[in-house]
Length: 220
Image (cartoon, rainbow, N blue to C red; front, side):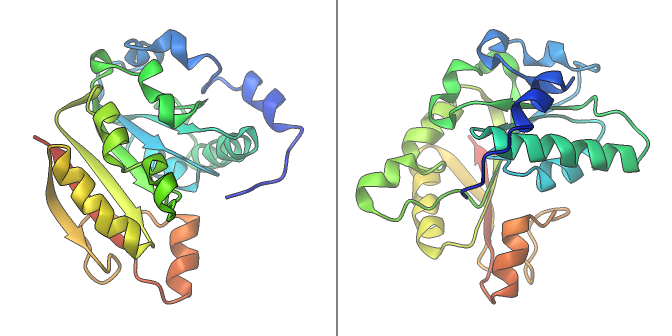
């Protein structure tokens, strides 16, 4: 998604207590940045405006979260959405961190010592052209990178509106040593998650009559 430049985003992020400006320095040490370092650590790749992570984190205070995006403007909006959700619940955002980084190079900021137990990938770019498919966040090339920091038995929760991406992703996961433990071609009528938090894109696609595809993949 393209978004207009927001001049306020960078200053607000730099002033935020839950924004990490140099994530490379925390490789293998992310848990130390949370108030309760013993809690499970989950990760969202491509958090966008933060509607998903803000609701997920505030509803699960016993889990720590990292949310990553590459665009300052997106992260600025995510920061504001997180602050709004936590303020509404009269609590401080102590179990969530956001950072700016290129997901294609994610192994520069995470490793096995970080013990990520779950990854969320919601409505990522489908990159339909053949020459671009290796850029997909669910491509085997990326999955091999995630395996370097995902705990044994860790899971990936994936949602998309794109049929081609979903079908290809089923193959990517299996070829990369993941077990598909749940899948659906119509998430809203065949739920596979304990609770589904609807994203902005999800709502838009659903209103257009597009079924939401989803899966849970487990690292063997």
